Length: 421
Image 1 (cartoon, rainbow, N blue to C red):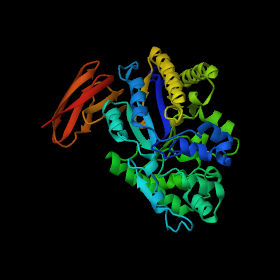
Image 2: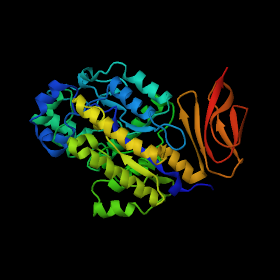
Image 3: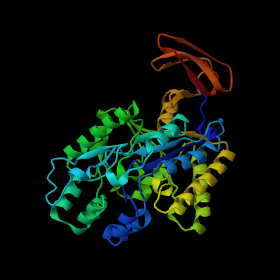
Image 4: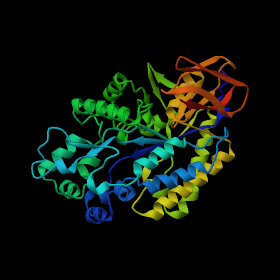
């Protein structure tokens, strides 16, 4: 296999919370909730102005990604860890909140105050451009049992947030959707629903999974495995572990890390530039760049964690600053001739020496590091009558028969484009 992770300079941007209707839908909600305990606490100071992304937020982030190219000539890809549903506040009514299970609105639909006109169209444009890649971040990102219990008890902060179509309160902040404190049956059901909704929305199963708030245990991994989701993010950051800093440090030296069919990505490199004052942002970029290079020196892909709140925020200046810092980091990485991957691509390269990622409906990006000219076969989408190689270096050929494309490639990256009937 012609794969050298030291020289490949692989980077994955894992970005959590896309599609999440939290913390607040609008400025009015933030004003009403700013003095509640969850918003006064440290996480609230960091995330209190976080809101559902707009079409403009996605458009601006996409523009930053399309401006640059990696060492293979392709733009950075944004792995958007996406939440699949939101509470249906219209059916979640006081005083009794009498529901058997949490009523939901499936993404891209939203509760009324969270409406973002044009968002779905902009997400699809970014996907077609090859810079947006959704992965799974849970069903609704909420400890539903704990939240409903707080609402039914009449806890003041939970009730006030609910009136603003926000779930954020102390009870929610103390737990997580897959926290072991939530009933096991609820956690299993939530994950099955999340995977099903993901598949229905995107036409494929999740390639990886990041449990919200890094709160989960072995039972959630087993549930995910039964559902065919066996690539997991954030294991080294999982909450509740003994000696967490030591675990994170040691995780840097377990690569590749696999247990049975489960595949674990390396520890995350935090990149949260909009959460700090302006004077600190240059240092944040420098620090992230240095730790990315450290990962390469260990022969690993660099896994960068960067939350949506850096790029979609009630304060437009804060989102602008986050995008500017991201651009600075990407310029440095482009200068290093880094290549940009998704989790699924990283796993495929480890396990078989080549990877394939759809670039919207028009084609597929194939990265090949196997024996030169050995056959690689891909299923062609329905309605495809042929395929051609439009980008990529080296000697290559493509043939199609029986709904399948056979590629014979030299080592390198290739864009295979479909021809439709």
